[in-house]
Length: 125
Image (cartoon, rainbow, N blue to C red; front, side, top):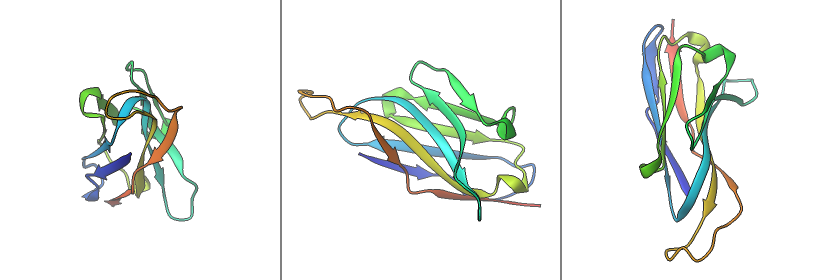
């Protein structure tokens, strides 16, 4: 399984960006998908998470500005980021808890954690 993220870039403060992350492989289910970020010199932190049933959770710092969504049919998670601030500058990583299967669906693995390659978001003041 691979997570392929895209959508980062440079934006001015107050602007918007949309990140996408697609899980590709032999997948049985993805109960949880989310986004983390890591700013220079800081630890990686949770930004937003969404379970397959639709419940969401957000870091306090992004509530009201960021929205996470999922397309379960495409195993894809999105992060709409509005009203961006310079302190949102970081490398953003998608994360998924995945149960794999084979082509015929003959088995399901326990949940495994996968990370995307990271996409840089830079917000200028």
